[in-house]
Amino acid sequence: MKLRIFTMSIISVLISISCIEQKTATEIIPIQDNPNPRTMARGLFPEAPDSLISALGLEDGIPSSVCAFLAKADGKNILFDAANGAPDSRLMHVLDSCEVSAEGVDYIFITHLHGDHIGGLLKEGVAVFSDADLYINEVEYNAWKENDGLRAVAKAYGSRLKTFSVTDKLPCGIEAIEAYGHTAGHTAYKLGESLIVGDIMHGVALQLEYPQYSARFDMDKDKAVETRKTIMKMARDNGLTVYGMHFPAPYYIR
Ligand SMILES: [Zn+2]
Image (tube, rainbow, N blue to C red; front, top):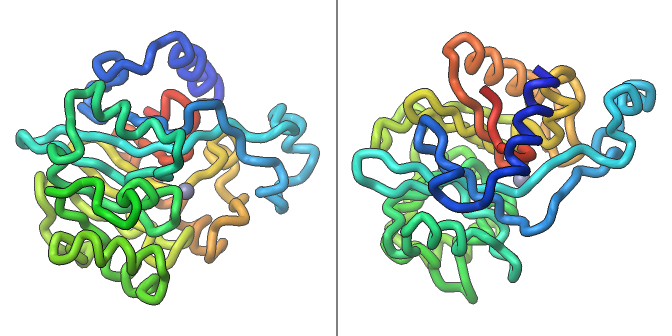
């Protein structure tokens, strides 16, 4: 698997950022939000022993990214997370290259409410995606109810913010899957043969083979370990392609 990821990474470096070339068989389009390469610092994985980190060649950090994903299903444009919303964000640029305007986004599904996933929802307090319905797992919503970031999003999106339970029927046949641990209501989404897993891994090159090591960001580390194992087993057993918001290029594992 390691070799495969490495090979895929090399290939992805060779492809350009245009929409067509980033399309995969499942019509999930990765949107790398950060313009420059990113790594997660080795220190974010304090439990991983130095000997393992150097055996994997990860002393200088673990390849990473900040991603959102665009999907097209049933004639709808669907966004999974909205990335950082930083001044150098590539989100709108990539949507534009896919001929999707901000108003043309129909649904947004949020994996969890950290700033690098919801920052792009707002610009100066106003909803960027003015016609989109915004879906948030009620467990995650309730855990962050008092948070200023969520309050601002709720104010801007008003009745278009929909909370749901993982057993609810969602638009376009999307299934929500509990992926709790990183945050209280962290949620993965299945669309066809694709599984969008949010932040179940921050350092794929380490955690794919060694899921027992959590990043400092995981709020409940034991639960995060369990979730990592369960979700990746589900993907393997069902032949799903796994897309992660902090996976390095090409942003998925097949
Ligand atoms: Zn994140």
